[in-house]
Image 1 (cartoon, rainbow, N blue to C red):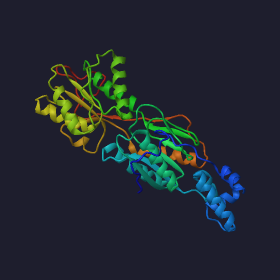
Image 2 (image 1 turned 90 degrees about the vertical axis):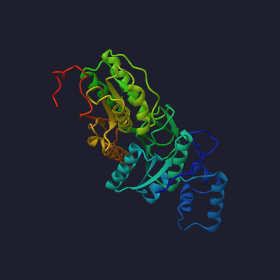
Image 3 (image 1 turned 120 degrees about the vertical axis):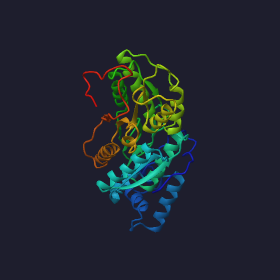
Image 4 (image 1 turned 30 degrees about the vertical axis):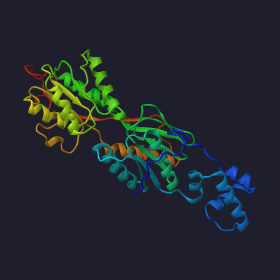
Amino acid sequence: MATTGTESTSSRGPGRRRRGPGMMEVARAAGVSQKTVSRVVNGEPHVSADVRDRVLGVIRELDYRPNNAARALLMGRYRRIGVVSLGSALYGPSTQLIDLERAMHRVGYSFAVASTLEGQGGAGIAAAVESLLEQGVDGIVLSEPIDDGTPLRLSADVPVVSLGEGVHLADAPSTVVRADGVSAARIATQHLLALGHRTVWHIPGPQDWWTARDRLRGWREALAAAGAPEPPLPADGDWTPASGYAAGQSLAQLPDLTAVFAANDDMALGALRAFAEAGRAVPAEVSVVGFDDIPAAPYLSPALTTVRQDFAAIATRAVDVLVAMIEGRPHPAEPVDLAVELTVRDSTAPPPGRPIPSHLPAR
């Protein structure tokens, strides 16, 4: 798998790539037809040496990069899809990457990946996209989870499906396929409120991740809809058990705390350890809900109630939509929000002194 470096594309600004000259401009400057330029670019015979040299000179002078879509029409598609992904071992990004590769192989496309690093922002994403375009891909899946909260503007001549925030392209179609994290966080918070908890505390993820912002928003919306007070937030976590443990240590000191929704399972795992050390029994005194349904979640003690997002289903839907765009078939124009599922296990219960509400099944 190929990876990008860390440099920016140019001084043209983060997230933007200047649109270069097209085949028509090259043909006009060289005094030949577009078909002749195409033959030179693709190494076809039946072009005289002097014409080939003249066209290549103009290509170098104008810094022309052959349009991938045009080349694909002439030579057949690459049958390759590129993925821009955060270079991370965290459960979500790494699992999503594996499932995307499997989904592409299922439909007969090969897989190329260009990794970004935290802190690169739009320039890092633009560099990764540029790397994939230079390799030759028919489409791109943008699986980068970090942004600054504003729409990303890129220049690419192949379709793009984003698994997060929307993307504006100058030269090709784009759409969004993603798990509905806002609704998922609402469901998790509503579950705890329905058990009788007066309110729900939240352990947030890093707010430069759109997933963390979605989960924070859903938590707030559920509290507001129920008329429940919104407790103050601990410091943002970084998705690790250590950050959940640090948040759990401070939350465990609050005598009125009875329910916590953590933005991912690893932070929930750290909070469970902190509550145990503080003598706050889960779920008898404090209920905990996570997010992701990591493989370890059913085997924790207590087994973790969590929101399950189906990474394989997200990957399959994203690849199916992108292939339809590549092949010119009908595809969704509006963002596709995939539902998630709350998996109730042993880490949630009514608050101390409250029976299980009659509308909920006993466990």
